[in-house]
Amino acid sequence: PRYIDMENKIPLHVGIIMDGNGRWAEKQGKSRNFGHRAGRDRMIGLAAHARDRGIKYFTVYALSTENLARPQKELDSLFGLIRRYFASNIKKLYKENAAVRTIGDLSLLPDDIAKLLTDGEKNSPQNAGFTVVFAIAYGSRAEILSAVNKAVERGEILDEAGFEKLLYTSGLPNPDLIIRPGGETRMSNFLTYQAAYSELYFTDVLFPDFSDAEFDKAIENYAGRNRRFGKI
Ligand code: FPP
Image 1 (cartoon, rainbow, N blue to C red):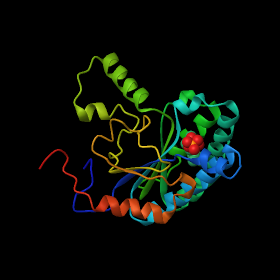
Image 2: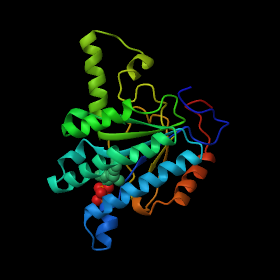
Image 3: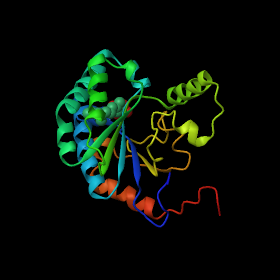
């Protein structure tokens, strides 16, 4: 099914917008890069926690197409974190029978990172019980446009299922819950099409402070909601 059974209160797929790393660091007089490293560590912790909670897909917004316009110094540090993660941490995920998947426009990234991301998917265990989806060089508008252009090129009229196969997220279930720490209440070009019926959870807690307990609060909040998908 595209969405989890409504009787089951654990979301199948959770997405998270990892916002507030820069402010978290600046509050302590530290560099923004220090904040991104803390964000990376929190992401790793949350992925393990999400798996322990029975969530099957965990999508992290690591770099948007718009983030690519940040100063080169900050980008280099984010690229460095991504490189190191995919060159080493990923092995730990594989050992735990977890897979990785990337969504985004890899052509916007340095070649070596694009290759690390492609290999990361290719080398993932088959029939993994848990998947971490990395949105990197990701933007919903670019994703939707690229799908539309593919359809136009083929001269095809598509239904929803056919269109969804052309999105970066092809084969993934839609997110049941999207969490945004960091105080902003917007979607910032994250999974616009896929989030049509997602539950949204916003909190002022900055991402590096978004603990496993804060995550559980979001899950509990989700469990208390009544999802009707437009029906009564
Ligand atoms: C937005 O917060 C966050 C980002 C642009 C980057 C998020 C990336 C990570 C947490 C690390 C990713 C690492 C790997 C290995 C994939 P912000 O820094 O813009 O916060 P601000 O709004 O406080 O400035």
